[in-house]
Amino acid sequence: MIQALSGARQFATTTMKRAASEFRLPVPWGELRGQVWGPEEGRPILCLHGWADNSGSFNTLIPLLPPEWRCVAFDMAGHGLSSPRPPGVFYTFPAYITDVRRVVEALQWKRFSILGHSMGGNVAGMFSALFPEMVEGLVLLDSYGFLPTVTNELPGIVRQGIEEMVRLEQTEKEGKKERIYTYEKAMQRLMAANPHLSEQSAQNLLERGIREVEGGFVFTRDFRVNLKNVTRNSLEQCLEYQSRIQARVLLLIADAGLNKSFPLPEGCSDALMDGYHRSKNMKVMTVSGDHHVHMNRPEPLVPIITDFLQSVGSAHATENTAKL
Image (cartoon, rainbow, N blue to C red; front, top):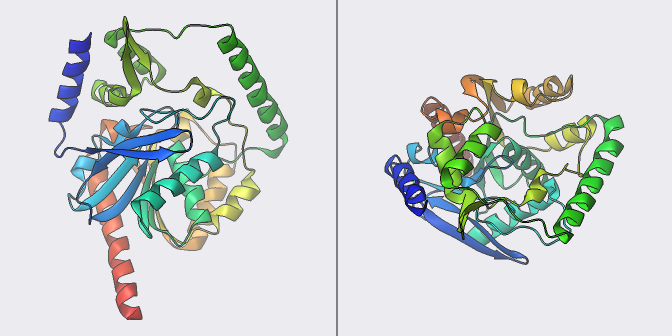
């Protein structure tokens, strides 16, 4: 099975136009890991993956972007090779946003752009609202940048998350063993849970999504990321955050993606879109593909993302020149 994993890594690597180096950042509970492409002095782009994915979700997209860009994609806590949060701790959006702030502080980035997919897009939207002076361009890959929850559903969601945590801790106390897979079975499980993934995309995720143990492989993802997220925002709160974003925003919505697989509560997507349009600082495009289009078919997205972020960079450069 080791040979099978090695072969998968070799296949994934040979399809990439440029290699990535490893990113490691010590944090109070362990470390955040990730990947870095491009020269150190290059234009800074932070890439945030979706729920239950890892930085491998950008393995096909980033190598196609301008080589002079400095792209950093890190595994969210509890995902990929990053350390899980301490025992008894929930995974919440404020915690993920704090991790983003830790990463950019370590990188010494004062102003940068963000590519965010799905959950990573929601983290990116919130971060851009809380730290508007730091984000110049925001590209949302099949994400609206926020995840509104109907207000009268909030108590039930919070209760469900608490109950799930208590049950999980009881199961762990009883010593339930982690399931061990062959590489092939791990691949099958991943693709069954994400039927839209291509085989290549699944291999990219498994590079950081499984680790070798005696008898086979186990998934690296902390099971707590599957628990109901207990920290939510109402639509009204999301719109208030959204109004504070100063960055130029590009929404790339997959025609067979978010709206079909993970639809927002009725009226929420329209309200968020109206909010972006009111800012007159956004662009929206519908692209052909599913929720993981940036992994499965990145080529059509490359010129769109490149042109958008280059225009953002040009506008920023012009603005800075005018101030001198």
